[in-house]
Length: 163
Figure 1 (cartoon, rainbow, N blue to C red):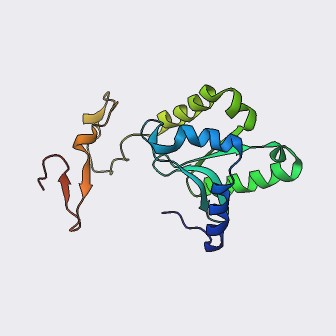
Figure 2: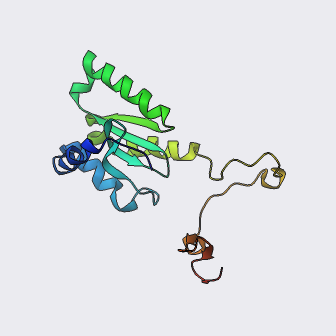
């Protein structure tokens, strides 16, 4: 879980309530795991900042920029903010209001392009044999076979209920 300043909790809630029309439109397409089953959060505090949209599984931040972001002060602030967010290992994708409102498919294409850049398996430890995975590509995860964590920290198969 990413840390954030406690003082940002209340402004974050207010921003969720007072979203711009563009943010509201993009949120209507991201909420409830509509984009490839990934969970997104809106107006999420991260460090000293509140980001428009955040997907922890993808380590992705999505920002929707209005006109204030195109002036020198806004550009400099965005540059500092992006550097901080990138230092946490997160990727920032920025879209203008116009892109979101007039080219939603293009916005989704860029987000999906980022999804395809993320490896589906964790890095292998040095001692593990990597050759058995050469040439194989994981294309779909079967949700029924997904493992869950029980209270005693042992993993069970969700469907069969076996340890």
